[in-house]
Each structure stands twice: as structure tokens, then as C-alpha cells.
Image (cartoon, rainbow, N blue to C red; front, side):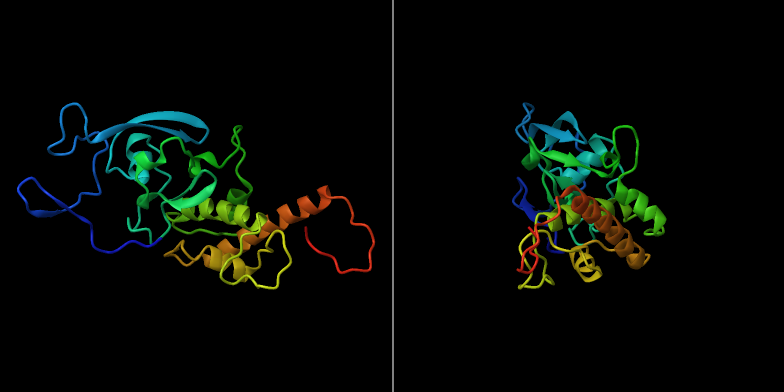
Length: 231
């Protein structure tokens, strides 16, 4: 999801090219826009289980809307080009770089940030507890994005979505999250402190716990002469 390193250009009224301002104040009216709000829209986002109604400039990214309009500063701004993963959130259950998404295009979507991972009673998400147990962070700047991305990884693997390193001959069903699988699936989330080993261990621990819980909930397979197939 990497973006070009050159900011897009727009044509001003005077006919001169100018860099597009991607750090807009969500409350600001774009230059030349009519008083009626031709460059703004009403946007409804369900953020961490709560409907939020916003009036946003069309150029505001989801990242800036979360941080500047909703004060959800757990989601971090890193490269602002979709290359570091610090801004990762879940949009309708799928992980995404919020710096690359226009907020108005997400109207009606369900967004989960790091602030919404814990249970309603404040109990941390299993991944949050695992990050603590395995020292999967140092400065913590990338941690919110790592956590949201890891939640997405667990869901993708459980749904059977393969990665670049998933073997073509694997049986159908959930993908087992080996260390190699976790590294590949989290490769879009950078950690400048180099806490990758702890991150992989934390995600592997949660994946193993979930796999064990699922196995305990399933009835024992009937004895057959055929090889076992994960369904």
C-alpha cells in the first residue's frame, strides 16, 4: 500500500501548480470553496463501537480525522505515505493504513483503533497482554499499529487467507501461524527499535492459545483410515 514519495499536485485558481496540503486542519474550509461548504461533507463513522458524526473537508485522511477531530491519538502518524504501518487501524474488520484513506470515503464504516481493542470492562486484548509478557515494544510509538495489524493477521489466518510464504499444498482451512508466516504478514509494520523477535513471540503465543481454544471446542473427529484434514 506504499504511496509515491511526491505529494500530488492540484491546480490553483491562478493556474499554478502547488503541493497538496495533506496536513489540513479538519475544521478548515478549503481555499476558494463556497460558504455553503462545497468542499465538505457530513461523515458518519462507527469508531470503537460508537457512532461519530463529523463535518470534514474532503481532503482529510482517516488518520487526521481520528487524531484531530476525535482525539484518538493512539493511532500514530509516521511516514504519512503508507510505508511504516504506524497508522494501522481496522476498517470493517480489515487492517488498513489510515494515512492513505480519505475519511469521506469511509462513510458508514466501522473503525477500530488501539483504544478500542480492550473489552468494555477495560480488560486488555490478549495481544496487548502478550506484548507486555514478551517485551514486544520499546519506545512504543509503533505499538498501536503493530497491535491493530496483529489483530488483522489473526483474523486473516483464521479465515484461511494465504500469504506470500504460505505453501500451495496446504490443506484447506485456517493457516497455521508459524514464525515465518507472522514475519511475512507483519512486514508492513516497521519497528525502529527492532523489537521484532518479541512481536513475533507475542503473536505466536496468542495464535497458539486461540488454536487450542478452537480445538477444545470442536468434537473429536471420528476414526478413519484417511489422513486428517483441517476443516
